[in-house]
Image (cartoon, rainbow, N blue to C red):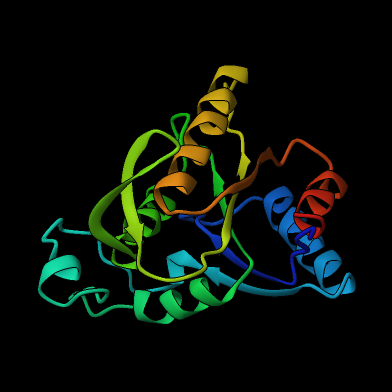
Length: 188
């Protein structure tokens, strides 16, 4: 059966004051998704209290499935597990996603087990839950970004999804028309 996205959690990882183009792109995307019957829960990461993962592994061994850091990830975890697609949106900074975006990606660790199994011929962590959202990435290229920068992200994001025991629906640039991104989300 073909999967159709009904609920998107959009994590906006812009660390500062976004330019008008970035703001308009996301507003248009969010409105257009709503018009297609897709629920969007948008979070401005810069407005949340988010700590960096300390690598303590308590979420695996001491408090299985629960991070010991008490911050706004406690709001994001259930939202992430309830959606069909987790859409990271970020400006490209030094050819990569923002530190805010990466911070949340790193904090997904409690949602998987520390135990390993072979997946597609590789060792990966076991699932903690039956279902996970598919991942997607939308980036605003910075001045000087090139095709190689996008190629790196397009190779990296599916690897992140595999480690999260999910799939990567797409990696797109805000240089592309909103309609193309809408099509990717609506029919994922």
